[in-house]
Amino acid sequence: MLGKVKLKIKKGDNVTVLAGDDKGKKGRVLEVITDKGRAIVEGVNMVSKHTKPNAKHPQGGIIKQEAAINISNLMVNDSNGTPTRIGRRVGENGKLIRYAKTTGEEIK
Image (tube, rainbow, N blue to C red; front, side, top):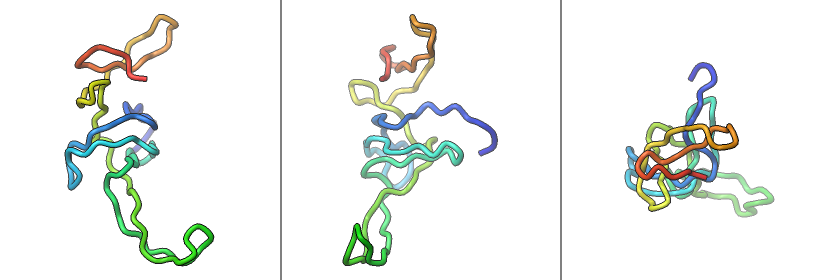
């Protein structure tokens, strides 16, 4: 992706996967990679990684971990747990706040 892009997903958001092998799964965003437009979601897009023995894994071997998924395949969940689109509006203190388009409530 070129240039700076304003993303609607932040670290800590609860999201639903819209497309791919993990379609329908829900999880929490662990990390957002803004320059690539991807996010790492807890329990989604698991891959097997072969590792050498190190301090964290003295035996080494194969470990399962989350891989990045494109942000276009994710949708934020509202307080009810249903996927919703995100809007932005100016709050009472003059800052932009994110809100759920389905319910109109603020997303923290």
